[in-house]
Image (cartoon, rainbow, N blue to C red; front, top):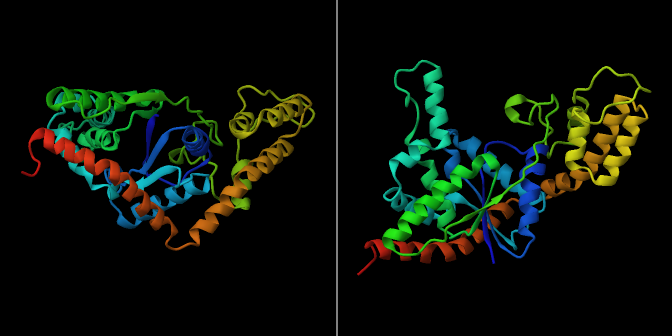
Length: 331
């Protein structure tokens, strides 16, 4: 049986691109005959977020969004990273095994130093926290502490797992075979276009919010950029923002029907109406579930604490084994 681990950074409220590219694939993977671990990476988040209220709100928002999207906390170990103290303790131990040169090559650190170079700063490491530099070690601990066997990664994220594998192999060679060497599950993540044709992203202000009300959802869909073709003119299906967004979430039959309407010259307003109505059908149950869960004051915390307790039944004995292997266990 695979033990699959996925981390979610609470960097903002989810949008359609997050749902199609990350949430739904993760939930589909959890339905298979595997052990599924899914955690909210609030410790990673403090590298960038220094506002306590904001971090709490984002953590809660992300958790509720995943639950509303169909995550079953009885079948998935769903927890908050900071509720597993063994992760932080193991991270220090792993930092004594990891080589600094390995961290120097991490994408996040290189991107930060490259940015400083481009901005003409004499000290290329100015403003870079030790947390950002060493975050691959905390990430390795996230994976190794519950001894995950598989980790879903995008094509541009494979370096993260390679660093974890390197650290695990070095530790095992030095102290004994304690850690699984995790394998990548390559996530063929769909890139969902935003309303302006660029990748859907909060930083581009082109998102379609996942849990907005019906009116806001309609406004977002109506903002999708189209060309100046008139009703009656055949519309190109390929390289079209509206059709691309629709194809990211609709079923094959619905896609075929709208494609035929494009060929018949449907007006852009009518086409957007179809996209909105079908998207609203998809998201209404999520919206209603989110409202229901939000009204239960202690529900979320109870789930997170209950699952943290279950996860610690794995992480506590593993950490004790690690400590014993390096000579800091009790006499």
